[in-house]
Image (tube, rainbow, N blue to C red):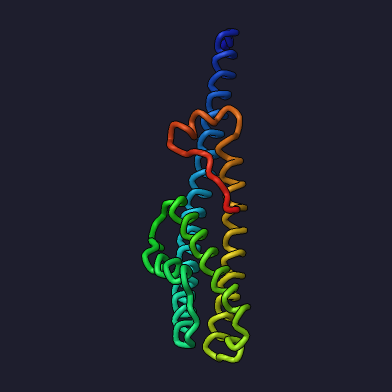
Length: 177
């Protein structure tokens, strides 16, 4: 008959706890990686939507010019949209692109309000309707992105595993405003 020594029981408990901890580390790492992958897809989706918005804003400024409406400083804002990098995976670049699109869109909308004849132009109406659809899609995509950011930030802050997640290179991310 085999006699179990006390140190063997302690060793067995230690091995069990080490296995449980390694399992927790792997579970957290897989969730962080999954959220990171989802965030990259959301950024690509946002880039596509913003690219379409920028093209439509450029088209809208062409409609304004064809109707003889002076754009003034807004023309340079619209020209900046043509130079935006909508392929970037860098979130800071995406944030900057969002700000540029919002600024140009609001300025063009202000010009439209001061020119009631635009509402009779079919091209203008069609572009504005498409921009409204894209804006809804953009807001929905941003909401989903922010939800995934919350999940990502939750998983990188799980107690006892923060050091591991930090070592493998994941850092806290900021949500869209």
